Length: 250
Image 1 (spheres, rainbow, N blue to C red):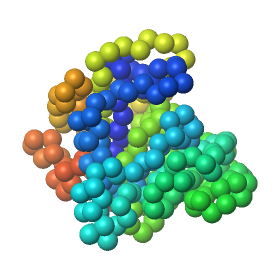
Image 2: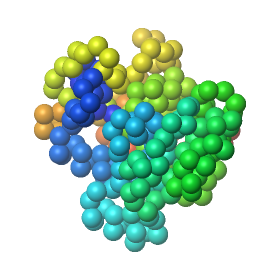
Image 3: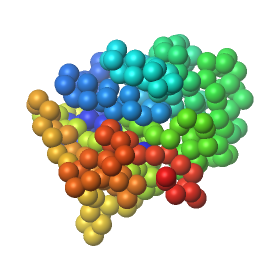
């Protein structure tokens, strides 16, 4: 699986203002669209659904056509996760596009959320605590037909959970050329105990200037299957496979 995010020089995903602060540029957004088109599912956290109201669709007409010609939907399956169940059925996540939608939540909140969404998504209850395990979520996704590659686009809490659990194959990190420096603004990654430390460094697979932003690609697991130039051996998108933890990635 691939994590993708854009942040300021000082590590923020956005400002504290209600309006969305654009971290990227048109050329990089097109690159992200290409990565989306090559994946089977796109995931964001419920806070991102509430704050940004993303559509999570492939925008480019040619890319959508290629997906259709290969027997897939125009855009990947949409995935989100919520601990509280606080999701509006009017969100663009549920009302735009023809792709299937999956919502993960604690098992004891699943029935109420199914009633609230009224068939707009498949609600999957996992565990009994207030926090869904990202490892369990990946196991469930890996067992679903047609979902082998997952792209996670945020927000910070979801990114932190995947990184802490050492579940990420590749990280696409775009750095914008400015600072945010605002108390209360969302950060790309929160405090945590991460596998990559001074004694276990992440592998920098590639760097690329895209207009006024910089893309850093980190290989965080052997499943990336990167060649000597930092390109994935099986998929030029950098998307890594989703599979149950007990099984090797094909």
